Image (cartoon, rainbow, N blue to C red; front, side, top):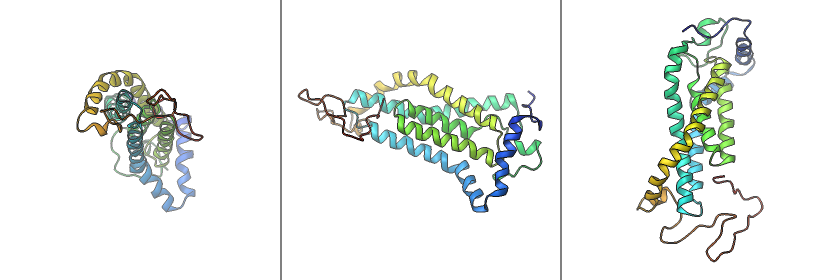
Length: 239
């Protein structure tokens, strides 16, 4: 299939040159920092947010609540991997060359990219993680989505993607994360519930299956009392 419009009159190309052109006004160390973050750093930070979220949702008040929340967290990296997999045939169908192939004057910060450009794998992966985490923990999800937005900017700044490659990646990652999350959570929660009752139960629930319940703000404690929400406490572990 013919690639997307790459003419100079295309706003997509104009925005590419505007963002990539910033490299001419930044010191070399800044360019290298953006290159590292865009290629490795931000995806790794997204994965670390997944681990942080998992550690937190294990402290839900009951095993059932923890199992469903952990299932939603586990879905985040799986959604990212699935979305990147879906992108493989999309790239082969669109066959859009990298920006530096069709345009002179692009400052390329990451060399060796020989595959097609649409859509951006990095943008797809980070946004899939961000949207998946948002479904289980709003604050960490927003942080992960913020990382995805910065990732998209970095990919254009590096000269390896058009802005529409990034937007397409955001759309693909969001679609996969949202559409399949309910199905995966429903299927995987019983597995994690069973795991929570095993010797490896701490991977799912920080409580005690013999009866030790960790109270969560707003939930009932043993005896019927409702634990108040202290000022400034994050009650959004799985809301």
